[in-house]
Length: 147
Image 1: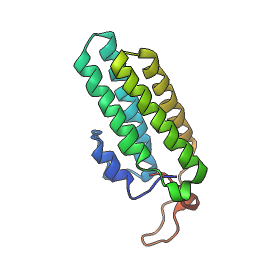
Image 2 (image 1 turned 135 degrees about the horizontal axis):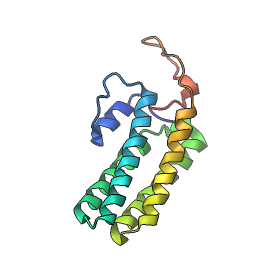
Image 3 (image 1 turned 120 degrees about the horizontal axis):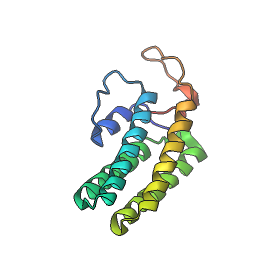
């Protein structure tokens, strides 16, 4: 479902501040979800406080995390239907975030936050496989591994 080798790069690219050097690929995806949720919450706070710049920056960050982090990490070849559906859901979230930015739509932000939290919780429920020895060939989860 996710490219293992791209997770750390995607995580760093979207600008989430954290030390990722020792994090597992599974943990990196969790951190992407956390970063996106936190950005959506900051955008809601910006709307509530009339802080247009804060709202805009937070929504832009959430969009980058969803699009350049979570969506870009999907392995469409090995992820099959799940990866396609997640990709479409991430596209929907980006659209909702854009609407929230244009219309100060708090409900759109709440919906995206709820979707992200549900996906994060489902992701966290997946038990990551034991670490593979260096040079091992096949990806865990039959190639449907995260991060």
